[in-house]
Image (cartoon, rainbow, N blue to C red):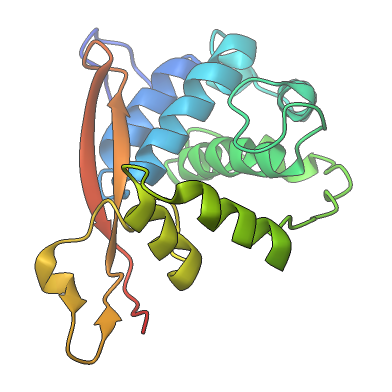
Length: 212
């Protein structure tokens, strides 16, 4: 069977641009992604993949093209979640995951003979450092919260170790004052739909978990 786009482009043999195939792949094979994961995929496609190789024909794509795109993303300061200074192995891996998944599906669809991602060379993994409050810093922070509007919110973060989006997603039925415990079972997320004129919504995702 031939797969076609609305504009009538025949993609049965990979005669389609990378950007066009990514749209088909996301709409057809990634419909069940969680909202945050879909936003991450959309961001990496929009900011890193399409600007470098989106214009290329899928059946002309080579490992070198993908390596160049990934190396550029590795050194890019665009779409960073943590550091603005260092090269990001995490971003390299996220972009690779997207393009590799799309090309692997193209191989399964007999659009490509092999996945050119398989020859990509990965950089050295980042050294991970975790920065936490000392007891003195935590006390100073708590003292500074006295009387502030969000004092209870930040105290709860300190006491539970909740992740950033978990407390804003709480409802009263998630809080048990008798035991006591807080059921951290979901998180609030901001979802961007870049194909709907930049539409942005706030949703909650199930995470599971409980804090006593």
